Image: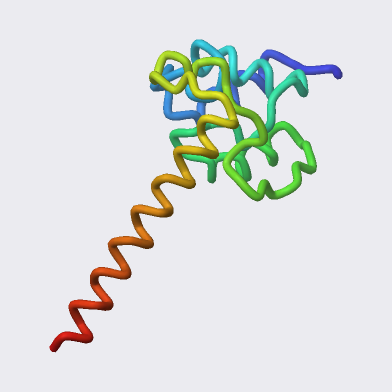
Length: 114
């Protein structure tokens, strides 16, 4: 894919410039370049996924509207302390779901007593 420094700069200018790494790149400049080269989704900025529409216009990419903010889990998630496997996460969600169900059941029983 042909990209220009001008496109990279334009994409970079709309980004929040927080260099948080949640997009999977170590800074906003690397993310802007990856989008311009077609290696990253325009909707990859986790700080403001809505920027993806503006970035799509700049990069002239017809990007599909994502169902979620991004289709992959960035490598930087380990810095956030999320090291769980999909199975572990599924078990945690199941446990939390059961807890919520128990709480809702107790609330309903308290309502019935009144």
